[in-house]
Structure formats: C-alpha cells, structure tokens
Length: 450
Image 1 (cartoon, rainbow, N blue to C red):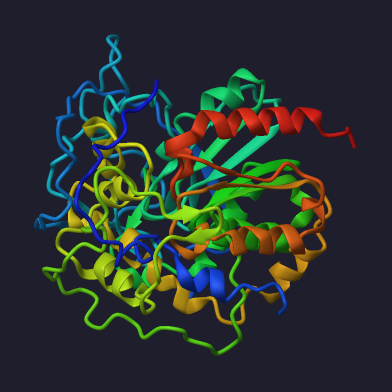
Image 2 (image 1 turned 120 degrees about the vertical axis):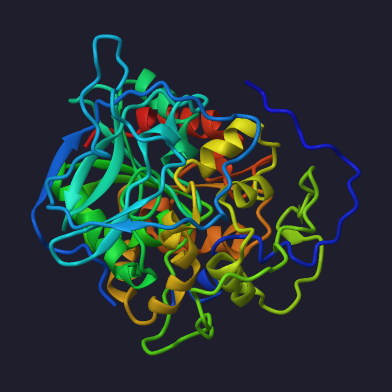
C-alpha cells in the first residue's frame, strides 16, 4: 500500500538535520577503511516459542506514551520463566491470564542478578501488517526475541534492525522473502522489541550486543546466512560478520557502517547524570512533516554545523519526550500512519522499559580499538556484498562517502548492483521495504551457484 506523503510547505530550518540520525557523524568519519560486558556472553541458551495470543485492544490513533514513569515491583525469578506469567490460550485462541499493556511493570532478575522487565504481550496486539508470532532464545537468563518465517529448510535471510526500531521495521520485506522461498529471521536486540529489557544502562554494551548475536546464531545453528543490516544493526552485524565470515553467504548493507576507531579514543564526553529526566527540545523539531530533500546527488544542500552527536546522546538518554516513533517518523521519507507509529512505541509502554534504547547512542564511546580485526575480515570478504542506500539520509550513515567506503574496501562488492534509492530516508526499510526485498531476491537468484 502506497503511504501518503507528508504535507508540503511546512516551515522549517535544517540546523538539526544531521543530528537526526541515530548514528550519524561519528560512525562515518571514524571508519575510513585505512586503518564493559553486557549480560550476555558464553552461557548456554535455550529456545522457546510464544504461543500466547491475546485479544486486548490498543488505541491505534495515538502512539503509546513512553514517558510516564511508574512504580515497579522487584521479584527474583529463575531462568525458566517464559512469557509474562501467561497460561496457554483457551479454545477460542484467547490467553486467559495475559496482563494488560499498562500494567505496573514487574522487575525480574536473572540468577546473576541482572534486573530486567518484560513488555507485556498485550502491547503487541493487533499491530498493522504484523501477523508474526515471536520465538525466543534465552541467553544468560535474558530472552532474545525473533520471528522465524518461511520454510525451515529455506536459505536463511537474517535481518538486523537498529535504534530505536525493532524487527517490525521489516514488516514489508518479510513477506517478499517468504514468498520467494527463503527462511526469514528478524531478531530484536536486547532491550528492544519483544526481547527482555535490563533496567540498568550498565547492562548494555557494544561488545555485549555482538556476543549475544553470535550466541543467537550458534543456538539456531545458522549457516550460509544472507545478512541485511542497517543503522546499529550494521555496527553489530558487520562486526560479527567480519569476525566470522564463514557463516555468511552474502551481506547487504543499507545506511550503515562498521566504525574503526583508534584504541583509547573517546570521541565524545559521556552523558552526565544519565538517569535524570530532562525537558529537552527534540533534535527532530525542525524537520517538517514532508521530509525535505537533503541532497543534490551526493552533495548536501545545506552546510553542516558543529558535530551535534553529543546532543543526540543526551536527548535519547535523558529527554522526557523521547519516543521511538518520533525518531522513525522524522527519519522516513513517507509519513507514518498513527497505528504504525504506535507499533514502534509498543515495546516501551513506560520509561522503565527504555534503558536499552536510551543508552544505544552512547555505545559509540565503546568502539575504540575493538573493530580492527572485524574490519580486516571485511576487507577479505570476497562473497557477494551489496549496498542499497536510502538517498535522503542527512546523517553520516547516509553519505555517499560512507557507502563508497564499503564498496571500495570489501572485495565482494565489486561488480554488484549498488544503488541509492529515491524517496527513502534513514529508515529505508519503512520507506522502500518491498522494493529492497524484491531487489535482493532478484540479486540472490542471479548469483552463480557455489
């Protein structure tokens, strides 16, 4: 279905356009190609399938309010807890004990003492274009959510989202791959989507996200993976691919990168008083309803100001008004319907659930000296490597130079049909998801057999 375009002629300035990208200047400028532990590492994992179907209705006219803080109760649970203390569906397919979305959050704890919350299943009822039942891999007592669609023996397509989105971002791509006979797996990072959400920002780390992805791939016994990554999905996924190239048949990148930062370099100061809640202006306030055209070819149509990534770090960490939907809406070319905006907010019914998305931009402070080996692995990756960019992404990840850097440095990129897609912003999967998946299906089908 063609989405309506945002209303034109809204007054605006472009002073915040570059900062509007969740991972902007730093991850592009530090990755020329010339050069703390998360609660997730090496313990065994188990998979479970969530068969809970609820019929509670959510208001599709407005995004969920994720800024209200509520009182939470703490309990200790063992690592076998599965799904919101629910019981199996009755004969009508309705769960008889699923808590409502706005229930007071219960803080759980792993055997290792990591406190976390679990978004109620009811928050995900009746999401538009999202019929997929979640499945879970348990890693160190914390559930990693994913959807698994298509034939179990099909070639694997693994889709990795960024911040502040979740696997819902791939709603238009999944059916195209499934119809073409692929097994499609879209994973939610820790703290995002339907995955468990540690409540302490110190429970998240850049390396920890990568370790969990490696454990996830190992637990599902995935090989010959066709990988698609974007935004933080690329910072995490390309690191894992560069260190484990034998697991991947192809790699496709959209508006992403693998930053290579010198060891010991800390490019920005850390956010001070990260648990404060502040009344801050949105960095997207100046982006009008109709996203303006940011580029003439590869040339930005406005002069960039001072590096404002620290302001984005502070806003996502501490702003009272920070919501996932406001970010995705601002950084897509096409307007999002209210029920779609609500779907992006569904994982975060209150601030207690938001530690993972709040801290994500600050994880750039942890990339110094950790990606050299992974980048070297990509520089030796001679299997097919494709870049498909949203052409209207004003941040560093959207720049032609960022895309070209990957094309120039990854051997498998030579001769591939790279492109920049019009009418697509940073979250190109939302703007042009079906087109991207169709191009990938055609591309994969045309590749010579091994």
